[in-house]
Picture 1 (tube, protein in one colour):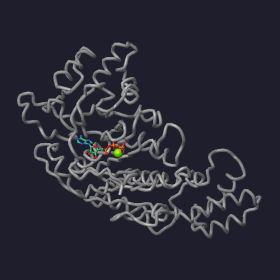
Picture 2: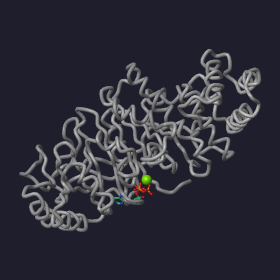
Picture 3: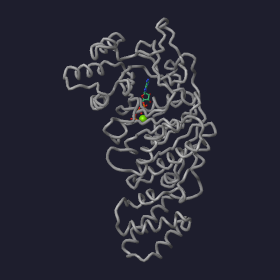
Picture 4: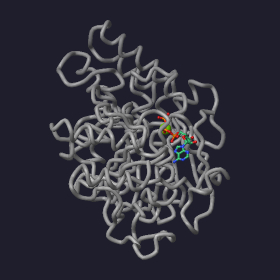
Length: 414
Ligand SMILES: Nc1ncnc2c1ncn2[C@@H]1O[C@H](COP(=O)(O)OP(=O)(O)OP(=O)(O)O)[C@@H](O)[C@H]1O
Ligand SMILES: [Mg+2]
């Protein structure tokens, strides 16, 4: 789509300009785009490549990236993380299912150089990936350069413990046993698998109920889900040590994730980081990226990390945490997320199921069929690789060409 078409589509739609436009744009010199605007994250330039499109960093935000497979969601996350880090932020990629993020250590490939902003050059970043011991034990190997991480008995809260055993609210015998057992964990009287089994054996409950609990304990032991060798504190240490970090979940799809063990790692990482941030032990502004968000905060279902993610979405901003969530469309994730989102990013490949709910949520999609058709026309005409930044407060829609990451982008699972 050409720039003029883009502009006429805006005018057509709302009778006012909705694309491009920035309070600080340099109208006088369109050939030399401004590279930086104070305390803001540069995402790219509008389709005429003269207006910087950016997100203010004066406060923290919840940002959604919605797009079909292969549309460049992770590319956007990586580019944002690189530039945020350069502006003094901490960056944590909380759910790297494809083992993509460790390539942040290397400079971006030659072929993407023309997509950097003036003055930028390819670069690698200090980066540490953490790999759950559960996945290392399951796969029998560790991805190169990763550090192991493991949940400790003392990290657990009652809800996590009950989650392991597939027990929610309610008041059945199984729950009663688990609450009693967890009390032993909490008092540090049962912080090993052997101890837990002994305590279970001592409890005066029917053998049939105890057997199913014992089976799960054996499972947890076999998968090495819990242990004290590789503490989570190393993750916050890495962030404080001027490094980006990720939780590498490579193998997530191979393991039976219905038991929620890998998700619990995400939940616990976020819980710990949030606590550290509140206690001011992570002084820099923090950006948390949750890729494949539908697996961690799904519309339906309640994996172990859902509450932790929701907490950080609802309350993280005041502690200086921005949360970026990437998924295919709004309907995939918990409906409470959309109301917290300040910005939504949608790519040129978005189809009606992706953009309609977003435009509806900010009141830009009317029941008037001709308006809907105009939006469809607008989206069909977006050029390859362009994105739209939708400000959910001001209801502005800005089409732009995203900048490339400064670090290497890999999509391959390795
Ligand atoms: N703006 C762009 N310019 C050039 N190439 C791009 C751009 N955005 C993405 N790509 C290419 O598209 C590929 C897929 O991008 P990316 O991995 O970010 O997609 P994704 O939306 O995260 O996909 P998935 O849903 O499968 O995780 C990248 O490896 C890159 O080569
Ligand atoms: Mg991706």
